[in-house]
Image (cartoon, rainbow, N blue to C red):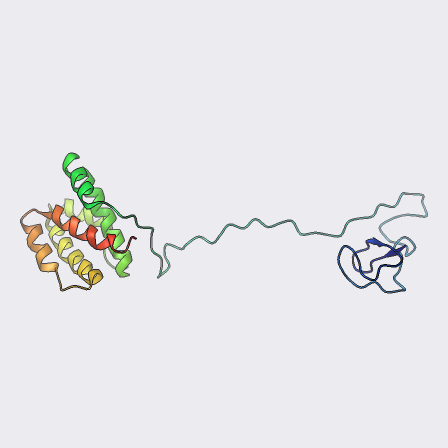
Length: 184
């Protein structure tokens, strides 16, 4: 009986390649039982136990997660029904409108690649602190970004006028329409 010189697997005498690792067997391959292995003590009458070759444990790596601080990261966007969002805003007395403003601000900032503008939460907090003045500015800036996304003329002035008359819900609907085109 021959043994594989690479892995130590016993092989038949007429085998030319190891059935386990596929390495070629040489005619004069040493027999590990006769080689005097230092790990066993055959002279002391101890039984010889053949050790299997070392195998790496399987690696269970998680798929790479997106880095939210990377320059090209986009958070997942969902397509929202504009009519349903308006109804929810009216039914909840504007609470859903606050959430809608936060989400739309973050999504439009991601779509335009603008990392310097205020996030949605900051925009809502500043609007509350300034008694709505920042909300008027927000409508103008976000309207310009939405026009950039739609590749249309600058609609920031229209959004500014709507915000001045207290019709920010229409601005939210226009901004949602711009985001829905990309959230496909």
